[in-house]
Length: 312
Image (cartoon, rainbow, N blue to C red; front, side):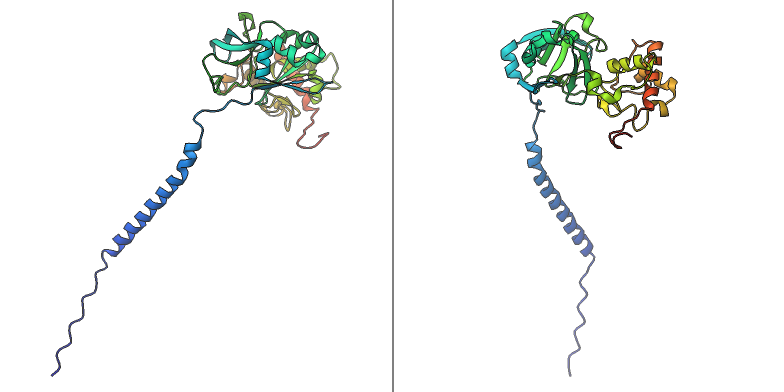
């Protein structure tokens, strides 16, 4: 008699299977994270601990001569180093700077045409690396109170502390002024990040900003002069001028999409509307604002949009 068949073996429990698979997945994820961290670690370690200064060179441009480029070292050798304390309008405090006499700097950069003395009747453009372009009369910048700062005492790299509401690096050069009477940036140019000094009448450098054909008795011409003095450092008209702020004429003029009372209020005190780096202009009278509006209206019919093609 044959023996009874052995009972079938109980099935192997699979209750722990999902837990084992989950554990395996967790281990794989942990491994991937570890690999990713290891891959990123050299990049993080390679990042510089401190920001580097831009090249400390200054370019001088003349309409009839080749551009000249001078390094800080060359300017120091020619002009020597001084320390001055100024009422800095962008820091809102007394600040000490290492400086070069700006008149001496102009003597070096424009030596071929007679140095600083030859600039008294000229118009200059002070160009910064962020697009700020400040017109300035030669008779103003040859003032002995003008000083070219290249750093702050006790700092190596970077040579300056961050400045202004945007907290940006003023390098390579910052034009500062001694004397309390020179502390208003509306009256005297205080460009930081200065990289180029160019001899050029504003109308020649930016021909499409002029209200050509407008009657000379029209207040728009006075507005044009005010635009040059108070607005063009940051703003362009027809793609010409400063590039820090928006173009005020193309593709649409500011007078085509903003109510005039709003424009006037914003020019007078922009931070009453929003926090911005645009400065207030309390020195502008109601008549000045009328003239600026007249200029903007005149230019709204004289558009030249370089992005849309010449003659637009």
